[in-house]
Length: 245
Image 1: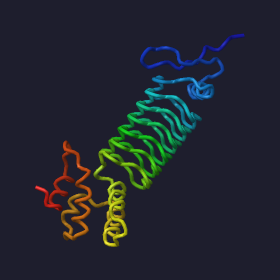
Image 2 (image 1 turned 135 degrees about the horizontal axis):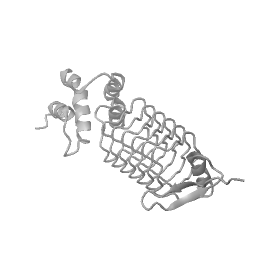
Image 3 (image 1 turned 90 degrees about the horizontal axis):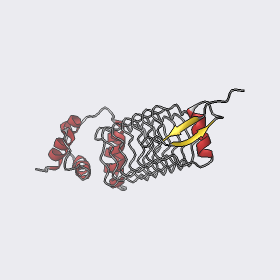
C-alpha cells in the first residue's frame, strides 16, 4: 500500500512545519484539520491558497501570509489574524464576526459583502480595499487606513472610526460621519442624506453649490478628519467652504 505524502503547512519565516496530515489532499482540508485540533498557525505561509468556504472559526493565524488567498465565504468568526498579510486576498462574503484583525494588511483585499460585525480592525491597512455592502456594525476601526477604500452600501452603525484615515471619495463613509454629528437637526440630516444619495458628486460639485449653513457645517465636521500629511482636492474644497486659510 502506497502511503500518501503528508500535506504540510509551514511557517513563512522559519520553514518550520506547523502542521502536517496524511489524510488531507489539499491545503483547505489540511488547514481545517489544523484548526480543529487548535494548532497555532502563527506566521503560516498560505499565499494564494484556495480556502473558499473553509471553516476556520477561532483559528490562530496571527501574522500569517495570506496574500492573494481565496477565502471567499470562509468562516473566520473570532479568528486571530493580528498582523496577518491579506493583501489582495479574496474575502467576498466571508464571516469575520469579532475577528481580531488589528494591524492586518488588507490593501486591495476584496471584502465585498463580508460580515465584519464587532471585528477588531485597529490600525489595519484597508487602503484600496473593496468593502461594498460589508457589514461593519460595531467594528473597531480606530486608526485604520481607509484611503481609497470602496464602501458603497457598507453598514457602519456603531463602528469606531476614531483616528481613521478616511476614503474621501466614499459617500457612505462621509455621510456616516455627518449623520453622527447631525443629531436631530432636520436640515443637517437632510444634507447628510443628500450626500449619501448623490454618489456621483465629486468635490468640485460641492464647491459649485450655493453655500448654505448646512454645507459650511458639513465642511467644518469633515475638516476635523484631515490628516497633516494629506493632499487632494478635498482639502482645497473644505478649506474654501470653511474659510480655513
